[in-house]
Image (cartoon, rainbow, N blue to C red):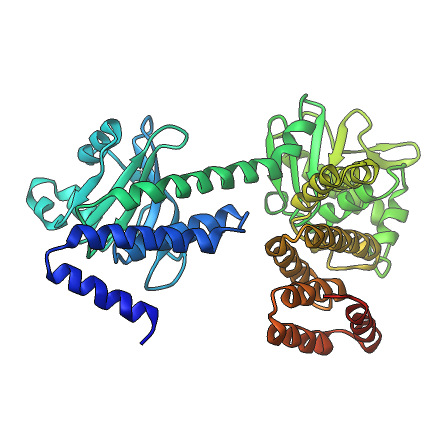
Length: 447
């Protein structure tokens, strides 16, 4: 008989003897301790939020737990983070993208009074408040337990269909703070990832172009996505100029450099046509042209201050190299990783004109991961080492450094079977030279 079975029998005995309060207190302590153990070394706000929702759902024996935020001025609710027991994740929810609050007065009152919402049977509203009942019915909510949070953000943490402790909101209130904090931190991280845009764009002549992942062009007036530009050839030409030395180039040279197999006889006409069409699209967010012609050929408009995420990525690496303290260096490296959201201009299709730059920044990114894994291993933060190793492997599966640090972490945790499994996987994806070098590096360690 395992510990869980013993605990369940113990709880049943207590409940049968009218000692429900003791069961609640016992479960409260056990679940809080289990959650703390699971998240003790975690720095990932998404993981913290998810595990906290699962803990609350399990404590109340519900089938769904989530956080909804509200905009009281817009009179709307919207879900931001949730976990569905039946699907095991944050899958499709039955909430509308924006849920009207006009018929949810009891929820507004609970929010204003900082009181929990406890509904043991939602069908009681079928006649008294049909709109509210239809929402519960659509969301498959037969019963509800929710606790509010107020100001930055505003909303509720909700357990759907709780089957025990339905009149006790204490555990939900205790875990709600953790979940709300994780949601706020996720937003801050998202803002941090986009903060470089706001730093760059301060005037009408400032232009920020995103090249890692799908292309985006940002100005003070707005943003154009690659889909909105709707011209693969123009995007290629723009990326070509942004990644090059930015000197004027004749139309024939540009066309030949990007599409060497095409007939360059009409390259000038083709480029003028592309630039004319883009001028109309770009005029929505900027009064000037992005690429202009001169006596020496075409070039980026010198009257605009054009900065790319690639430029900022390189700046962060330069700052990291100049830092004397390890912590300051790590912070700049992490900022660089925030910018590297995907391969360089994937729409370029790894063509010859962009391939060298694509590989250069891919390997710069992998070098950052290796530096971070090394730094966190030295401080015994093995959770972060695993996190960065997994991200590095997602970028390059045949990654000797990632396997090296992963295997060392497993050895430090005395997980030798897992370490052997990782080494076996490495043997299948690395070439012979890389694998032999990995074995040699591991043999030289004292783990």
